[in-house]
Image 1: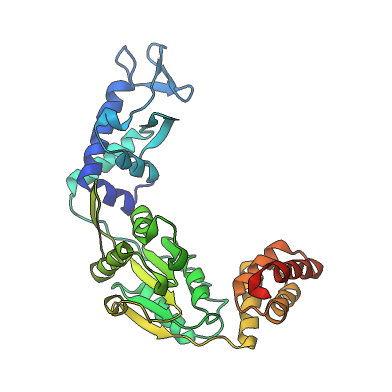
Image 2: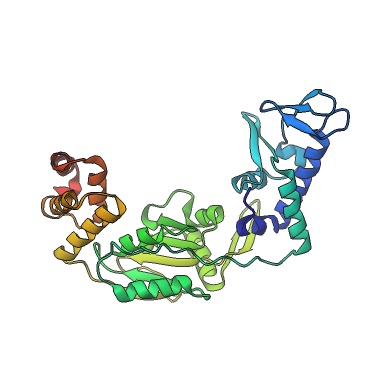
Length: 343
């Protein structure tokens, strides 16, 4: 188990701290030999052998009812790697603690420094980030400054399709700790639940102008203003410090609430020219997809002049299917025939 900031922050919350203490106590009482020894060697999923007397015992882990804790508490601890699922059935899930010493150390760290948030590490930015993106050198510089700054600055990129906004977000999504959502078609869980689930340090939102859920908007406003994630639901309340940068893209600022817009540093983009778009596609295919330059140039030409598309992602889809120019023509022909976008 990796002992990192996210695990410590989770366990510092009283409900998770108490649940883990109960889990440790339960397992120590149940996972032991009748002779009293806890020197056990795991033989199968549920069977352990005592190295002291040789007797075999069966341990099926613990259920939420064994600890009198809500199911979501153990589920989140399992997601963080603190617990593991030992058994799953129609009656529920049973967990166990594979690394008791690590968990005991975590509890001691929390007990010794309760309320102290470990400093987060700087974002690790790939050296070749933004390399496929044509132009916008000044915007790239600002984005890098914001990512490296000790203080959090949120950035909004506004402009028509084919102006590099989404491509920039895709590049940023290569950074460890980032999470990207498409506001217009975000999952039923919503942005609020994505933040709760993944606790991103860099939240990337494409088409933020299409955000509709008031819960998502409320959470974003608080997170961007104070770096606090606050959610109140029927069964629980979450209130935690989350130093998260938000970088978003939108086709227009119309419809965006003024209070949300005011939290961003806003930059307006122009669409790529055909020549710029061609260079972008070739760079993406050669540098990110490993395609030879000759084939990349051919795909770029087919995407721009046959499909009449200005989306580099179409080129990526084609290159992942096609091994040669003949394959490219086949894929493009079928795309043009069956997709309303290219007719």
